Every structure is written in C-alpha cells, then in structure tokens.
Length: 120
Image (cartoon, rainbow, N blue to C red; front, side):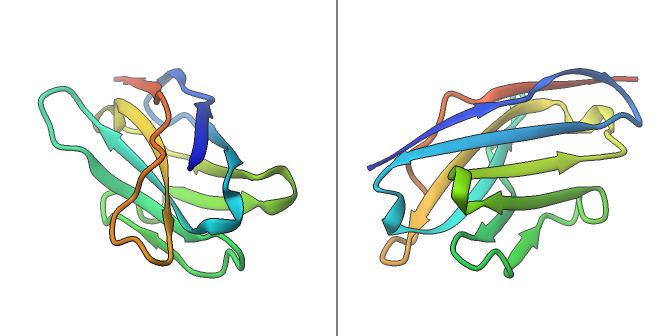
C-alpha cells in the first residue's frame, strides 16, 4: 500500500496560482504512475493530470487545464506536485492524489484531499 498526503490548497482569486504537494510513503517502489484528481460539489471525480513516477517524462493533462497546470515529481522527496496557474472559478474542487502500480488499471491510495477555492 502507498499512503498519500496532499497539501497546498487554499483560497485564491481568479488568475492566481497555487502549488499542491502530495507526499508518498509506504510501497513507493511499486508506483508506476501518479495522478491528481479533483471533485467539485455535485460532480464526478475527474483526472486532472498524471505523471510517470520513475522517469517523470510522460505526463498527461485534462483539456480543461492544459497550458495552465504543470505536474512534476521529486523522487528524492517522494513527492508529486501540481503547479496551478491562471486559476478559474471552475477549478474549485477538492484535489486528491493517487497512485497506480504497473499491474493495476485503476488508481488507489487516495489521500484526504485538499480544498482549492477560486473566487471570481
């Protein structure tokens, strides 16, 4: 099992920036990919971005955040980041990180989430 703890959320005005962090512990050697998800009230949880854990050279983004969000990871710190720029009110959600092993088709190890609120 991988344990994940998110941090860095907060209240920001539209156009502002936040950087989320996700610290991993436990069976980190089994991690193949890390993802950031978000869930807004009344909406389904969606994958925002993901990154290959070991190399960090394979990243994916949801269309809604391309060009504004950047995912990165620091293996030495066992941490994945989500730099969020040009934030919009529609980015308001609870943000979660999760991990996927190479043998899994789904993500697991969900953290408690961190609230991001963007005011207009």
